[in-house]
Image (cartoon, rainbow, N blue to C red):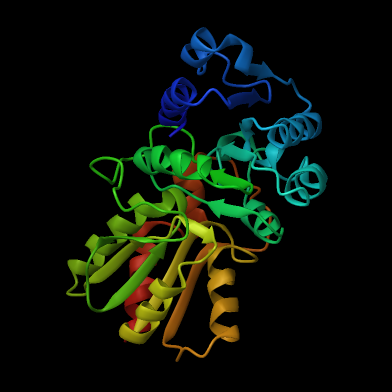
Length: 307
């Protein structure tokens, strides 16, 4: 995902002279092409994320289109006050790009885990929250974010994630989910880089005679309410799947929408990380298995809920 981001950033920089790249002391080689083409528009802000966010807000309010980038917990929780006051309160069109969301950096320990970022950023007025599923959605999200007049948070994985789409989705739009696979028994709403695991879950269910509609619910704020209304009216079971805490993430946002609306509630499952720090040692695949986010575990739980 991060390679696709860097490549798309260079293309956007070539097309739009307002685009400025701010890095929190990572990815210097990753942005070699952008920096070579637009040296004056690349700034390494160092390990000073609060300051970087303030600089980005000032640039945005001066007519530029800054993109601030670093590892997820450092660009969200570390500088939350600056995002809230400098960016969102001012309605500054800053694009905040986080790399290594969820358990992508599981092996580096809890300082690099991020299962709270959606919760804290979707609580902010004026903020849009987008979680691309693969490299192609990253490219589409970047282009869509640049068209917004308000802040956008883009939550990426790391590298090597399986590609789901054959190219940039033509129908990608912030706030509009994408149906990846059709089914009639259950609807699986996946956000972020859980989509390949959800596709595997759907295959395991299909092998057991259960067909699943798989939806890339890439935007957590604003929600695609039309998609939700149709899913809950049509399917016996709807499940949200995310590599984020059950508190405040996609599942929580859908729960709030259900309670506030007048939709008849079918069975609803939420898959996510628990309200606890992950203290075991291992990489992302291991962490997912331990947290109940592996395809086999999810398929079993979905099948049981349909019984």
